[in-house]
Length: 431
Image 1 (cartoon, rainbow, N blue to C red):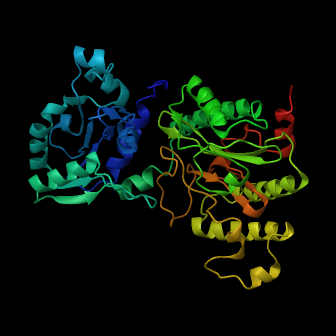
Image 2 (image 1 turned 90 degrees about the vertical axis):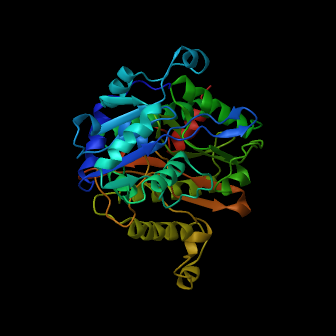
Image 3 (image 1 turned 45 degrees about the vertical axis):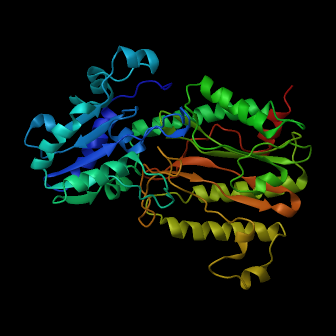
């Protein structure tokens, strides 16, 4: 890993929060992700399952975490199972966690090698009445590949059919959505690296540059500053491409007079940042581009001010829709008649702003959170309104990441990243 060590106290606190919500005499089990094959002997780079990382800080494959607060044996209340390292593995794959290093990372004293899992698990299952299993229940999830957790659950239920099985996700959705200070600091670090990348590309963008060259400038700056890379697949779309919401080809030329939309964020210590900026390829906005840009910026700023404890996510989006409707009328894109005749299920503003405004963010770019419950202090949300006008080859989206506070305005983790028209133009035209 490129990131600096994280104080294990964060993971101790996270396990305690999970354990406090478990039923009596129950045990929870979490697995690392697989290393996924491509073909032949090629694999994708390993990316740790965010749940086991959140609860342990362990960032390597073939790891298993057990949480059993009511275990009769003290050394069974928290257990890590790790792949045993040796000199051969160290030479060919690099250093893996030793038992001492695993304790330093996680704060867990009981560490077994993975080959002991079946034997120890049998003993644990004779003590526990209920088992929390970990399935992916995120509202955006669409999983076709069988995960390591899924295989483990299938075998566990086959071998121990008489136990009661519970879901870990309702607990995780609740506790992961409210961030500890240490987590906010890590997200801030990711945002600060994103800032460095953005300022780098402002001096690079000009007519004739390819979208992928801009992507390359970002990744150079990210890796240089200890990021793992992009927190998600980057979107670098110029001209009409900015109107394609999930445009990821990034293979076209940036032409004079166009605006380029960059939805890009650095990942640091498995935590995400999520930024969008739209800048003029030629270094200066036209009057029309500036008018659309400032309309989006006004909506973003007004929407952000609504991120306070007690706000309901669905109601919030209705209010943002009203703000956007007003701006689109003033831009001449829709009329009051369009609004009067609109379908309530697809309001008139959706023609030019068809996606949501905010989502939870943290370990996952679209992080855990219960959308039907009021917002709380410590939650991190993006704010990302946009206006997309394909007939004008113009797409503008602006996005920052905010932490909800106990009182007052939310804290903008990206407050130092340039966003005002004049600031953007000045930075782009520095010699």
